[in-house]
Every structure is written in C-alpha cells, then in structure tokens.
Amino acid sequence: MPYNIAMVSDNFFPQPGGVESHMYQLASKLVDRGHKVIIVTHAYPGRTGIRYLTNGIKTYHVPFWTIYRETTFPTVFSFFPMFRNIVIRERIEIVHGHASLSNLCHEAILHARTMGLRTVFTDHSLFGFADAGSILTNKLLKFTLSDVDHCICVSHTCKENCVLRADLDPSMVSVIPNAVVADNFRPLSQNTTESRSPSAPGPPRPLGPSDDITIVVISRLFYNKGIDLLIAAIPRILANQPHVRFIVAGSGPKAIDFEQMVERNVLQDRVTLLGPVRHEQVRDVMVRGQIYLNPSLMEAFGTVIVEAASCGLYVVCTRVGGVPEVLPSHMTEFAAPEVDDLVAATNRAIEKIRSGKVRTDLFHNQVKQMYSWTDVAQRTERIYDEVSTNRSLALIDRLKRYYGCGVWAGKLFVMCAVVDFLLFIFLEIFAPRERIDICKDWPKKAFNKDSKEEERNNPKSDVISRKRSPRHRRRKGQETDGS
Image 1 (cartoon, helix red, strand yellow):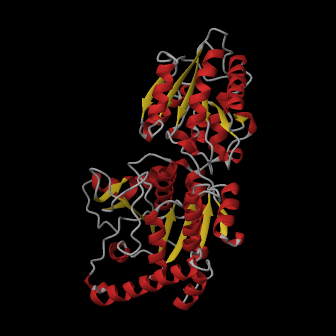
Image 2 (cartoon, one colour):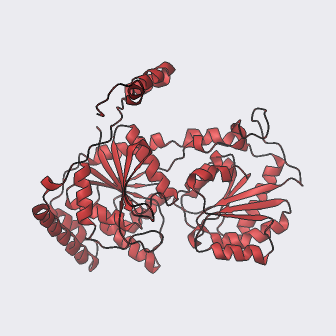
Image 3 (cartoon, helix red, strand yellow):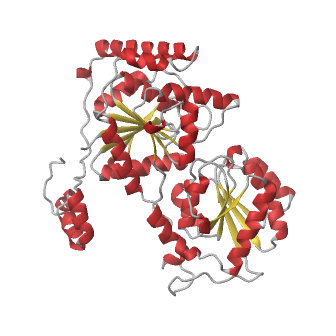
C-alpha cells in the first residue's frame, strides 16, 4: 500500500552529512517503491521555499532562524500553522522525523500526533547521561518518543542507548542500518577511464619502503569527531613514516587548530587541507589514498567508513559506539580512542598495505553485498505497514503518557500537549481545511514485486518498460495525462 510520507529534520541538503544522505537515499528508494515522499527542513542562504530534487522529491525549506550547527531555534508552537498547511496540502499520512538534536523533528512529531497522524522517529546519534547537554536532550527525546508509533535506530548500540535515554519499550525500537550506493563509490582500479593501468584489477601490489602511502580523512572538524586526537596523532605518525601523506577534508570549529598544527610542525608539504567538499566529490577524494582514518569519539554508525571501504581503502577507526558493527574485521584496524593506540593502529595499517596482506581490491563487491538502500527502504516500509494499523489515541491517553515523563517535566509536557491541541482547534475553526489548496502529486512509479522479479530474470523487460514510460511517449510526441 503506498503512503504519503513527510520526512522532517533540520539536517538536510545542501548541508553535507550522514543524516542528510540517509534521508535523501531513503526517500528516493521509497519513491521507487511507489510512495510519495516530501522533505521538510529549514531554509538555507539562497535556498528557500519549495525545491524539487531528483526523483520528484519535493523539499519545503521553512524560514526559521538557525542557531547551533544548522539547528533551528526551538519555538514549539509557531511551526504548527505552517506544518499543518504542508500536511494538508500534501495529504500526508506518516510523519518520519530524523535526528535527536533537530528541533523541527521534535515539533513535527508533536504536531503530527495532535493531528492524529502516524509518526516514526529515526535516531542517528549516541548521547551520554551526565553532562547538562545530554540531560536536556534526553528529556526532550523522552517527551517526543513517549507518544511516537515506532522508533528506528541505525545500530544495535544506538538502540541500547536510545532505549535507556528515552525509557522505551525495546519492542517498539527496530534496528535498520545505514547503507551506501556502492556504484557511486567505486575503487580507482574499477573505473576504466581513471585506471592507472589498462589491465584488469587484481591483488594490490606490495609497496616498497620508499613508495608513498596516502591517508585520507573526511570529517566534520568537531570535537566529537575526534579531531583533537587527530591533531595530536598526525605529527607522530609522520615522524615515524617518512613516506606517508595526509589528505584532510572537512570544515568546522577545529579547522583553525588543524591549520596551526600543520604550521607549527612545518607539514605543509605532507598534509593537504581541502576544506569542505560536496558529497558527490567524496569518492574523488577517497580514491587518492590507500587508508581511511576515522578517529571519532562517538558514532552511532559511521556511513563514511562504509563509503571508504567501498572505494577500496583500508579503514583505521576507533572502537566506539556502533562502529564495530559496521564492517568486518578484515577491512578495519581498530584502536582505542587514545592518541597512542591510534598511532599504533595507523602504523599497523601502513605495514599491512606495504606488504600487500590486505585484499582491498575485494572490498567494493563485499560492501555492495552487505549494504543496500533498497533493503533499507523495504525494512522501513514494513515499519510503516505496522504503524498504519495502530489505533489513534484519545487526548487523555496521550496526556497520561506525557504525565509519566517526570515529576516536573511531566506536568510541563502535559501543558505543551494541551496548548498544542487548543491551537489545533483554533486553526481548524479560523483556517479551515477547505481553504487550503491540495497539491497535485508527482506521477508515482508503479511498483510491482512480480514485475521487478521478472525484470531481474529477463533483461529485455527493462527495455520494454522504458519504451512504455511517459518519458518515451513524450519523445514520440504523444500526449500524457501525467497520472
């Protein structure tokens, strides 16, 4: 059964990142399966209003003030009129929020429940329990998830963390990992136009002691990404390895510290700082190296290390969060989140690459078999099927859930829910639904499991389907009704 789905988060393109890529790829695959998907995010400089992405994905850039790391200022209720208008215009049935720190996500789930819509939340992060920021975030998450239909986490570690933070029933939390478009992250040897050698790809050639090895780092330059570890480790690695170079791409508040480290140690000829790179340029940067270094201090999944392995890079990463779940041991060299261990793990990886013990030429096909956005979309679709059968809760039942969130916080949450419901009644009276224009849907793709199986077994069926497509009819000069 096709659904009309709204994915809501502060984290979306043009800002690069794992959550942004996850939302787009999942939305695109859901559209391929016959669903309607829109994205609701905040406006960016030069990108406001409504935009259309590939595959007919409509994006609403709402004009709200952003504060920290492209997150909107929490307003709680001012987003409701605009959100209600979007939901009614697009005939939305399921609201799917992403990211624990997204204010738009939390507010959208609250308003969606007030309107009687089904809600799903995907958690992409890990948080602690002791510092003030984590305590406030966890309390906000408990408020939101106490009245959500289902929760999705990107790793088993993320699920354990989310269940503890929001005091959830583990049965209402599913684990659906991220994925990667493997064809977009092919090794250099598998692209004939870029290959250094015309011969077919084979086992990597052992490198001599004087051959250069390039280590690639692509990350946001923030503390939680382990940039302080990286700043301390790079001079020590380069001091022990005279034929090693670094390529570092990314931006953030730690960029100045990084530049100072390079100048202080006179490493301008061995450390290349690229600054921010667009997601479509990530592969071109990765294939310039043999090793990918990920020094993150906290990571729920780590999509970038899957992309690096798909590009044929040997991965050195810290054993934190859900990272050990992502790749098998023969693709990775693990280290504790400490400078000494990170340096030692990187040196071990360099020696393995020099000796040719690691078959990096096999990584791409292995990753392609392990991760697929089509599989992620299918599993998410099952969640939608499950929540669509849930009965709508009466206001009093929702208030009981909120009231159990804490001695003081519970009363505050109940007040927010009541005010939100009164605002909804006010909007229904003074801005009736009849006055809101209904948008015409983008032509949906007809998805049929039997036909898809037939296409896989019969390559000619793909040619037939293209000949019958609206695009083909337009090329022939015939009119289509767009349905």
